[in-house]
Image (cartoon, rainbow, N blue to C red; front, side, top):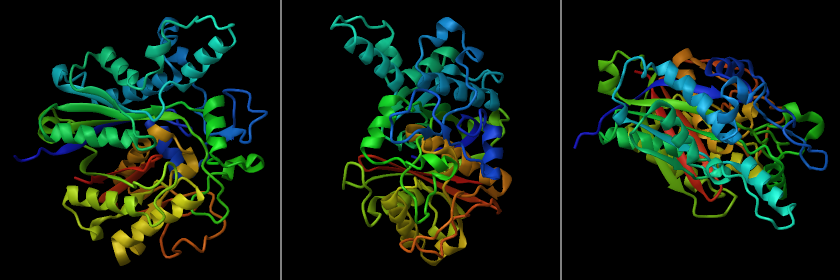
Length: 415
């Protein structure tokens, strides 16, 4: 059976550095940091008092009050990103067959704010079980694709992928496979996360995973820097419209890139730490290249997972050097988490959008906040430190790795 080709025909984003895809891209290129003091809850007693929040987001600018109250912030952000992507792709105006349009969405945690509010409310209620009737549907991770399908009447495949920080990259790969097999014509896919809450920050602080650079929060996310001390928690959502190539051509859609490769692997090593030799990272990139039918020397750019954690940055850098050999020193690699922070389940899709942007615009955004080289990281690798670089990118790869050892990699090609 000959597999169908899959292309990108639209995208949308709401992130800590831009409330739409265009603003997000422009601020990536400028090297804007999204880190700021936390406003979503009182962080006075927390080790980390800053995060990469979405700025100037008022749900009532996007939803009727009654509608907004039925959605966790996670879902609100997801629906907003999906609306932009659907509009960008013009699939509604072109009156596509909605029975052949699916929605696949990733979230590592789901409605954490709702869960926290409801459980704390019960804990303070003298053991009287008074829960909001929307508690469960607001909390569950799969409600966002459900809400998106209900808004547009999309009757195709509809579900959520949950693989920690790899969740939305998994959504892209699942969508690709379904489209290749002819199970749908179009899939609205992406991810969202809204974990900047007391329990989210407290939990990651307890793991000692977050930066505590409270007096220098703008530069706290510093992937590959010797003095990195953990990631910066972010929130937001991204959405990509994936479409079967012939279907896109027939309706005259604008095609931005081809999703030609998707790879998956597991570290099978530790709950939170990466394999020290980058085994899972190497395997997932190799699997992605094999899926695309490409060789390592055809890669022009890699958007790394690059979280700014002491162990993760070393393991991934070593894996790239192992996979690409000498060619690793000829390409631009970067970590856009230096600007957005780590959006957990939404990281994969917003970084995929950044990778697509390099193909469209011929610019690789920088890895900001680099001050001191780490002797444990190969200095011959070009991490695009501190300034964007113009480059003709024909093939771009994006890595996303999650707690539990979940690894996902996607590869986009210029058409």
